Length: 386
Ligand SMILES: [Fe+2]
Ligand SMILES: [Fe+2]
Image 1 (cartoon, rainbow, N blue to C red):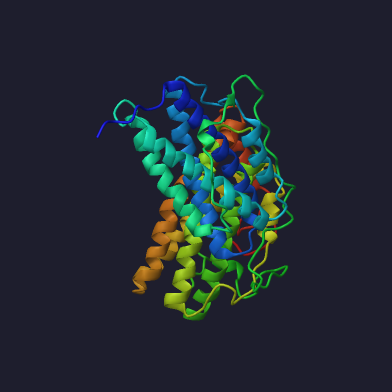
Image 2 (cartoon, helix red, strand yellow):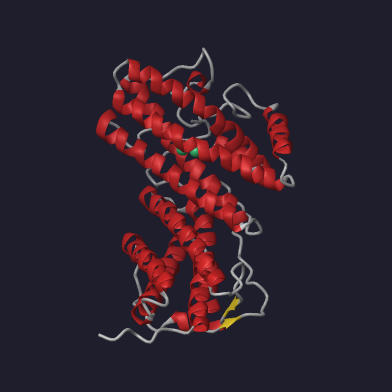
């Protein structure tokens, strides 16, 4: 069989530019809506997908650079593509957003990538072949996992023209969050679960490791909620700051997925080991709100630079105590939480320093200053944490 003729370099770059525009908007808007999606399973999928999409976009930017196209902002989308992006941007609920993003945009993206794969020259353009083979399967998986009513995609958005000298397309930022959404069956109260005492969240000799089943049930339930709040905070950091460098959004997307995965670990642990489930106890948002009220620098200093940094000590302490008691399965959970916390703390250093003109010292100083107003559990006022 003869090789397909393939696309010329400009056509190829145009196709990747169109994918760029769709994925950029998907990462931005999914990050905005994730906290407002009430369903825990759907929230998890969104976190997983936003991380896939951010990495896919990084690879596409790289390919555009190789094809000698401006990779930071490859022109402006055609009116036809802009119309789809606009519909995605004006959605007024998570459900309405999912319908356009997963019912139209992702299927159209996957379809264009399939057409691209069929027609490209597999030797001359092998870099595109490798990239697209990997990315298209993920896009199709996303649609399967979260399909609203998928309208069968037709046409080929890869061929849409890109307006190279036009102004960058502006990203719509959703109104500030009042609070994140939880499943309907959840009880949300001012103080969260009253069972959770401050000794659980303190560093040092006074720290209490939950070792009895009943306290572990409450503890992991509260921890699952804290993981979701962490994912939601990082998602909003990304969404509310489109002016930040692309790598910031990739780091945030990775953390969103990590925190979602931590929540999933706790969800499974509760069901398989502890005999309780998500929704058995109340949750509260006072800690989330106290951090969300800060600007980006303050959130990075207080959440990544303080809360997560201090949680590392507790996770290690909990792991050691539970190992000694022979509760290996539960101890291992803390081993992974601890490992993932390292890059999360680093996200604070990296982007906090960036916001302070590249000075890590200025960041450390800012962290010290903001920590002044915290109690010994790391909260501005006591609230359940991790
Ligand atoms: Fe976590
Ligand atoms: Fe974390």
